[in-house]
Length: 482
Image 1: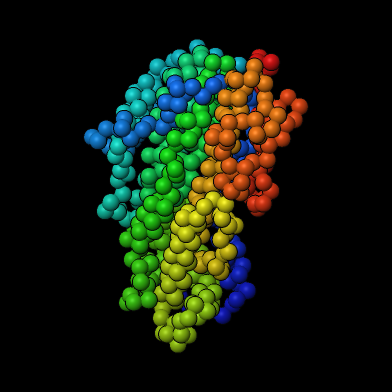
Image 2: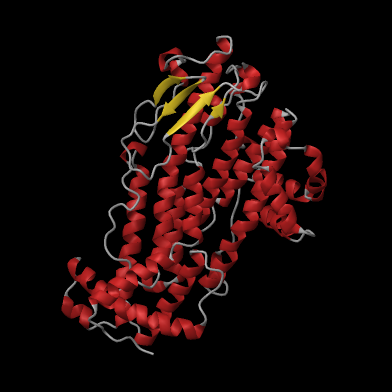
């Protein structure tokens, strides 16, 4: 099968829309879960807690001085995931754990989970050991079996790692229930370190998933903040690594990965291949993109032959026009195989999106632009959207998580005020210790502080697009503390 040069602009537009719709699979779901859950709770209960010397020493991650230089954390995590997945009735146990970390704390009975915790002690030991390792290297070197095999190995592993994360949250939540706050904080630190290690995987979607893990751990910090006797977490929140996941390194690593895995993306203008060779390279790129996007398996060869031939042929017009607009000569493009023209277009878009993402991450949060960064043109139909969509989501998640942490630090400042003023909420922001107030990083100014009945509302400044879902957080005094 060889490419034919079509002249149907309308078909190219339809095909582009089809592929963009296809791309909304597990990556889109992961982003949707992240942004739907972050900072959307109707209220956060606060109990008085002074920021004393003991609280200032608390950490919600494992400091560098406590990490050991020997061992590779990834090996421990693999062993834990395999063990947990192979337990008898593993699916049923995962469902029980999932429900336990979401039910009200008052309904949580630690005795109901004593058997599960005993059976999974090996997992806890492995995760604890791994979290204290300085090194976490996920094996992707050499592209054994090709890039598709590497992707098929790494991406599905996110699911058992999410299950391990739920298990760690259950361990911490039971400690909270029993008011063993030191143990709860210790397991939250391990869970956050585990998440930060998952964020070192080769792909950006892993970074998004890791940030969601950290976000879920912050839910437990909020939960503890409403319980008498829980410490103040202002210092611990302030000490969290910035950023929690190094997206800059992750984007660069993924871009380099695809360049190595698919040489057609590295200077495709200069490469000499036959039409069939270009076609085979693009087929492999498309198949791998499907797995990155969360599809469970590659397209069957007979389906791929028909679908890909049609999509790539229709895309030629779009790629040709875009490259001409970027300065290439039409005569030079006409001499090239169709597959090469499409590869050049794909390479340019991949570099442009990754470059724009890196530029955004170097800016202060309040200068963050729209999540699409001004799309540079139609996506090529070889599946490039599978690669660039998570890049956009990762950059956005970086700043939204920073905003949530800032809002939570203000909540801890309120707890400090309550401890000094007979459990009363402040009437205005000026009542708080100015050294403890955190500004809204996405607006570069203080949050709007409003006293309401039985609480305080911390609202964002309405200067950002609607995709940012943190409208307000309401802090209240729990009934037990009134």
